[in-house]
Amino acid sequence: MSATRNVAVFVGSLRKASLNRKLANALIAMAPAPLKLTIHEIGDLPLYNQDFEADPPAAIIEFKKRLAAADAVLFITPEYNRSVPGALKNAIDVGSRPYGKSAWSGKPGAVISVSPGALGAFGANHALRQSLVFLDVPAMAQPEAYIGNAAALFDDKDALVNESTRAFMLKFLEAFAQWIERNAPR
Ligand SMILES: Cc1cc2nc3c(=O)[nH]c(=O)nc-3n(C[C@H](O)[C@H](O)[C@H](O)COP(=O)(O)O)c2cc1C
Image (cartoon, rainbow, N blue to C red; front, top):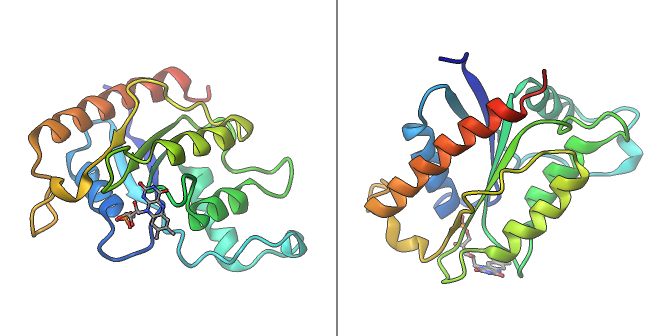
């Protein structure tokens, strides 16, 4: 069995009752070895401003330090206006600069998009993948995860009670574990 793989999880919604956060918490609880999932909070990051690159705020230094220490990255995001929510895009930008000092480079990644609507936030999923290409984050291609009608998947205690989604998410995590082993920086 491989050593623990620390996966930094980024949730694209900031609201307390977020469906994306509920799914993130479910995945944290069910992640198979060697994966260890941890949410890296993005809600308190300052908005990216190139003026502070030379002397970044402490929150950004800490965010980049924690990201640099992770073995892999997992994005769990809603779709806002057919694209990536601003808070998540900001986290991506903050972690990517200064130019040449990106903390994302080379980390194996995966994307899950979640929506109460029928389309499973497909637009956000693929808009995010566009940035990941430039960031040199090899993003797992299969299985794709567009989780639609998500409000119906959880019970009133936020447990993921939809059995087929749970089985699919386990399959997704097992594939991601293999993806990380194949793409981990040597
Ligand atoms: C600004 C905004 C834009 C939205 N645009 C979309 C959209 O393009 N596609 C979609 O499926 N849902 C859209 N929604 C609805 C979100 O999918 C819904 O609010 C969802 O619950 C957000 O994820 P969360 O539960 O993790 O907070 C939008 C919501 C907001 C607030």
